[in-house]
Image 1 (cartoon, one colour):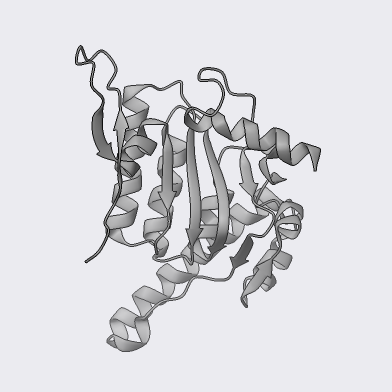
Image 2: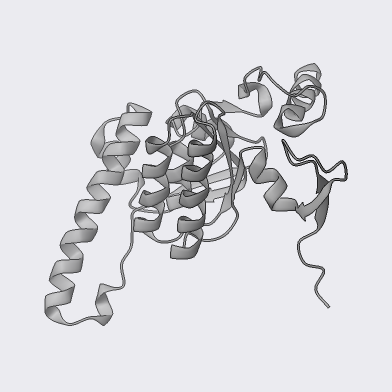
Length: 225
């Protein structure tokens, strides 16, 4: 029998009931502006993340959001949707690579707010060119799809050129194959700004281990290593 998503107690703000309400773990984390890209980028995954970003932006446009990433990529258009949402919402969006950020997940990682893109020490980032399934279509579909893929590749390449400040031809050639980058290499490439928790700001609000501000405790420990 599957365990399912654990429930944890949560005191709802402005609720006169003294007893805590039991909510899903992820619902509690969403309240702390913690979002997760832990699957391939499918329509459902992208829509879920975009919807949460917009809701949290409406709820409080001053609190920064945190997008944790451990994904092997997925659909190009779905990654572009999340990327556009990051740029649409008013608060800054931290992107944090915990395990792997490959393909369009690397694009989402690089699309976080400037100076707020983080890769953890043992993470890996992979970039390559977008692919298509146009081989299975008719000739007209092949031509149309090929043109679209070429335009998307140019758009994605230009984005990495902007972030990495490398020549277009160099990024274009790198994306010809699967290029795996260590956190330090991803930082040098301009995909992330820092390695480890040193990139997290001194966040106001909750103190100690409560909420995402508890990451500051880990930040201090990491700085003493």
